[in-house]
Length: 102
Image (spheres, rainbow, N blue to C red):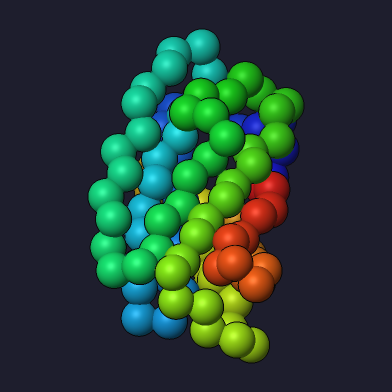
C-alpha cells in the first residue's frame, strides 16, 4: 500500500501467525509518532520507519522463533478511522523472518 491516497494520521497493523498476535503503528503525514510495540508470544512485527509521507511505500518485517511450515502470517492495516484498508499474507524464510511491503 503506497501511502499515496492515504490520509494523514496514525495507522495500525495487526498480524496473526499460529496462536500469536502482534500489533504495530505508523503514521502518514508531516507529524512523526513513535510506534508502540508490545511482544505477545513469539511474534514481532515492525515497519522500516515510524512515519511516512504520502506516496511512500510501507515496508514491513516480522519474525518468529517458532516457524510453522506451510502457514503464513496474516496481517491487516487499519486507517486512522479504524477501517481496514489492506490485508495480506507473508510466508517465513528458514530463519522465521517475514518481509513485504504494503
